[in-house]
Length: 85
Image (cartoon, rainbow, N blue to C red):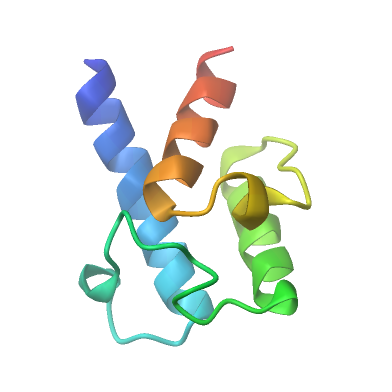
């Protein structure tokens, strides 16, 4: 699968999980470049997102995920790189 397609799939998952944590009606409401903290993520929500993404991917996701990778696009890029390794 091409890298762009793979990134798109992972990005959809990240957006969906972020929207669920924020209690949004759908992932389409999330701008992929907007910083998660600016969208209303608290530290507790950041941990919840980290745990959900770790469970879905099987990757050890760092506790500082939303601080190190502030947007859903950045998080998806991190996950794609980790999955490829």
